[in-house]
Amino acid sequence: MKIKDGFILRTVADSCIVVPVGERSIDFSGVITLNEVGAFLWKALEQPCDKAALLEKLTAEYDVDADTAAKDIDAFLAKLREANLLDD
Amino acid sequence: MKKLKVADINVLIKYDHPTLTKQAQAYLSDFDKENIRINIPDEELDRLQRENPHLSVDDVEYIFTGAAFYEGIINYNGFLLHSSGVCVDGWAYLFSADSGTGKSTHTALWQKYLGADRARIINDDKPAIRIADGQIYVYGTPWSGKTDQNINMRMPLGAIVFLERSTENFIRPITAQEAIPKLFQQTLRPHDSAQMNKLLDVLDRVLSETPLYRLGCDMSKEAVELSFNTIRKDK
Image (tube, rainbow over the protein chains, first blue to last red):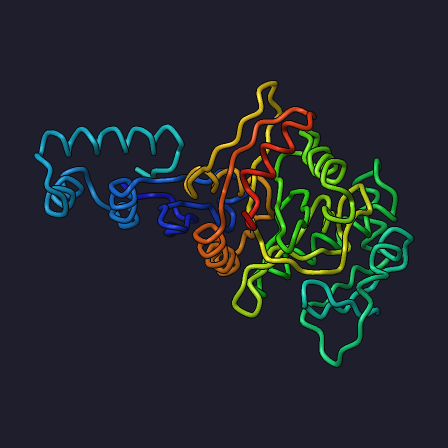
């Protein structure tokens, strides 16, 4: 899976935000604010990857046990799917 | 083509209709080379008018030249904030909200209670914010929405306040993270990614350095006292 094309992830005034550009800005006019972990996962998902790879990256980067990390990833992916931001 | 200096940007622009002719009067200038060129041919104005039958050609010229200017200003460290801007004691304060919420009403109340000499409306609907000479300034522009209240001057930005109607008056500081979605609702968003990155560069600095507030207010004198005493920079 992968984040759909047409989004810019940037830090603005210490906040991680995602904004649509190009074609994407026509059907998605909002702005997404992410926390640090959200931004980390978003960045990972800019390249095609699976849940196992996300889990490996997240546990390598943060001091978090695999169960908690897996739950965080599931919750994040569910939000992305709900907002139709993922290509499967 | 006429020459205007708006927000310290040289604008070469074609216009013929009364509203912009009147509003642009105070911005007429002279220069050798333009930064922004705005040339909407008559056929295009007519086409836009037919697409927007509730508007006159005069309205169309005013609205679409404004849109072109605010697209262009992105290339000069600037952006539009849909807001009513009031200047007091050397600082500009911007009250931003959807149309019809009461931002102009609130700044008009500042004028009523602080005096129209002390509280001046720099632009009642679409002031420009721009980083120039290393500082963040609010600029008046000829494009000020339905009112003709704009002044050709610049003033350092003192605060951005997101206004909502409320029966209880309240004001509280908000974080940049809270402000960003509100701000994006009240500006022109570039579709091109290079332009978007330029806007985000400017917003990074503006939102890092500017006090940001959320204000709920009615139309009372107390509402003005609360907002003015909380956000004023000279205290």
